[in-house]
View 1 (tube, rainbow, N blue to C red):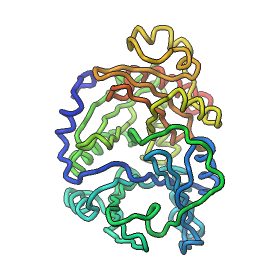
View 2 (view 1 turned 30 degrees about the vertical axis):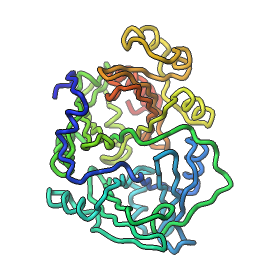
View 3 (view 1 turned 90 degrees about the horizontal axis):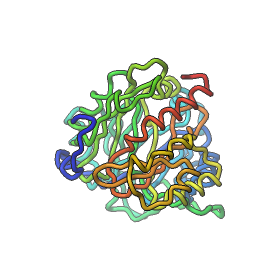
View 4 (view 1 turned 135 degrees about the vertical axis):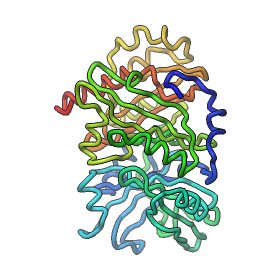
Amino acid sequence: MSSNSTVEPKKIFKDAEDFLPINGTDYVEFYVGNAKQAAHFYKTAFGFQSLAYSGLETGDKEKTSYVLQQGKIRLILTSPITKDSPINDHLRTHGDGVKNVALWVDDARKSFEETTKRGAEVAFEPVVNKDDHGEVVTAGIKTYGETVHVFVERKNYNGTFLPGFREWNSHYNPPTAGLKYIDHMVGNVGWNEMNTWVEFYKNVMGFAQLVSFDDKDISTDYTALMSKVMTNGNGRIKFPINEPAEGKKKSQIEEYLDFYNGAGVQHIAVATDDIVSTVKQLKNNGVEFLYVPETYYDDVLDRVGEIEEDLAPLRELGILIDRDDEGYLLQLFTKPVADRPTLFFEIIQRKGAQSFGKGNFKALFEAIEREQGSRGTL
């Protein structure tokens, strides 16, 4: 599909075979250097709440994991507690980042069989974990870089999270920031690898291509990238895949690949029903966002048309606006959430739009280039 084509999403989704099928994102697991402190950060900065814990006290002698929840979003923050843990290798290579993207399915064994027989590389075979609250079946397949998709079948489980975890009751649970669910998750892959992974999601997982962007769509005077968005049949899982494109200077994708040392999850887009309220709270909590010049707002309504929101708070907060045939969207991007310029978050509110903010790409990437310039990596 050409980058400027407009196709009704329902028709695109029918192109997905959806032989798994996937009910939604179950959780996203980060490997981090200090899970206890990372959990405090995500609670304080992003408004997540304590949910579950696993570690020495629950019998895990290798790692510690804290589980946080907000709306339908669940994050696991995991750190090694032994010097020989393979998690150390992941941290040494990549720094803090996403390791496991877990997908909620009705039948984990079937999902594993369907994907591996189509060529998926095994991360781990199906395993059944039990406790007093029932059982959960999980299985894993490898994707780009060291990222793993974990199939989670929990229909026979009524515990807090997963067997091996206990409820984490904390006196400190700051107010939520209004984050509802994961809208999409973006993967950065190496030069000329985008189509390889597009084919993976199409042929191995039964996804369809929702939209594509080339270097004419996503470029500035200095840098460029290519992107294709893959979706499952019900549209609950959307995975844009980015690769670098030739430019005069080093693109944000190249910077990511250099510091992450390979392919990985670039950003997680989380949805809200009130982006002004959410962003105000996140900023007050200390979350840092990319700066967009006020000149962006001089003609934005001429481009996107009438919107329900007052433009003044959007301008004040730096929130971007874009429109497609279905409606419009509001979005804003954080700066990287760790010291390496790798993983960041997107806050998004959809007012009918099914797209990804194509009209904002130039302003967004110029903002990213300003950050790269300050880091000396442009």
